[in-house]
View 1 (cartoon, rainbow, N blue to C red):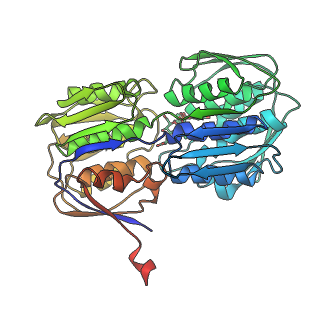
View 2 (view 1 turned 90 degrees about the horizontal axis):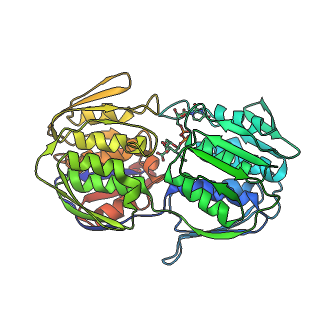
View 3 (view 1 turned 30 degrees about the horizontal axis):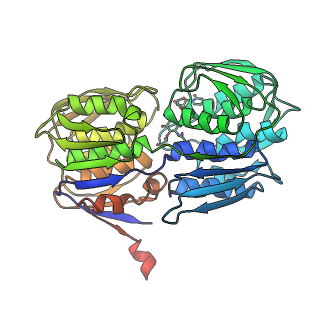
Length: 426
Ligand code: EPZ
C-alpha cells in the first residue's frame, strides 16, 4: 500500500489549480442512466472513486469512455441498453455512493438491484431515506441477501419531506423524479452545490426542475430525457483543503479555478482566525497573518460549515493560540483523525460530538495511519508543519477524492513524495 513521506517546515508559495468536484461527478455520471443518448461530462477529476463509478456503469452494460489527456478530463457515457441493472457488492463495498444508481435505474428500467452499501469509517451511512422516498413514488422495495431490489411499472410523483437533510438522498430521488408520472415536491432538500450541479445537468437533458439549491424543489416528470454535455463544478472541498494548507504553513498561496460563493462559511472562519484572504472571482489568495486565533466550528448542512472540512480545520486549530471547539453534527464517528494528530503532539480531547483542541502545539513527525478521505488530508496538513519526516500509511483513502494531491502540493514547495509499499518492490 502506498505511503506519503512528508517533511514539514516549508511555507507553500505559488498557485494551485482545483480539479472538478468528485461529489458532483458521481451523481452526474449516474444521471446518464436516465437516457439512452450519450452524456458528455467535462472537468471530471482523476480520482479513484470516478474509476469505480466507471466500472459500476460498465458492469451494468453502459458504454463508458473516461479520458484524462491534457485537454480532456472528460467522460462519455451511453446507457443504450442496460443489460444487467445490478450494482454488485464487490463494487458497492468500495464506494457507498454507488447507491446513487438506485433512483436512475428504477426510473429508467422499472427494476434495480443494488447491494446495500455497508457503513464506513465515519458512520453507519444508512440509506433509509432513499428507500422511503422511492416507496412514496410507488416502488416496491425488498431486501434479501444484502441486496435491495426495487420494482415499479412507472414511478409516480409524490410529496416527499426528508426527515433529515441528505445530499445523495436528495440527488437519488431527484433523478428518479425526472421520469416519474406527474409532479414531485421535495421539502427539506439538501442545498449543496453538488445538488445544483446535478440539477443543471438534468435540466440540460430535458428535465423540468424548479428550486434546486433551495430546501424545496418541484419536479414535473417527463417521459424521456435526451443526452447533454455538461461541465462539472470545481471541487470546493479540495479548494478548501489547499486554502488551509497555505494558512497552516504560513505561506502565500493562490488557489485557482474555484467558486468563492461555495466556500462562504470556511472563508469566514479563516478570516476570524486571522488568516489574510484576497477573494477574486475564481481564485482566493491565502496568506497567514502571523499568529492564528482559536476559532470554534460546528458542522452543518450547506451553507453551514461543511463536515468534509472538519478534519482539515482541526489540523489548523492545533496551530492556533487558545482553545478551539469543533462540533461534528453530521456524522457519528468523524473524529478518526484525532488519535493520529495527538500522536504527532496535538492536544485534542473528544467528548461525544465535540472535540476540544488546545493550541498552539509544536507538532512532531511520526508514523501515522490514514482512516478515511478527509482524515487523510488532515494528517497531510499536520505533517506539512511537523518537525521532521512524517510517514503516512494507507494513502489509498486520499486517492479516492484528491487528484495528484502530492504533485500539486510539491509544485508550491511542499516536501512530499509517494512511496510504494517497500515490500512490493522485492
Ligand atoms: C455526501 O454523503 C457526501 N458524499 C459526503 O462526502 C458528505 O460528507 C456528506 O454528503 C455530507 O455533506 C457524496 O456526495 C458522494 P448524507 P451522503 O446522506 O449523501 C444520515 C466525502 O468526504 N442519513 O448527506 O452519504 C447520514 O447517516 C464524503 O467526499 C440517514 O440517516 O451523506 C448522515 O448522518 C464523505 N439516512 C446524514 O444523514 C439516509 O437515508 C447526512 O448524510 C441518508 C443519510
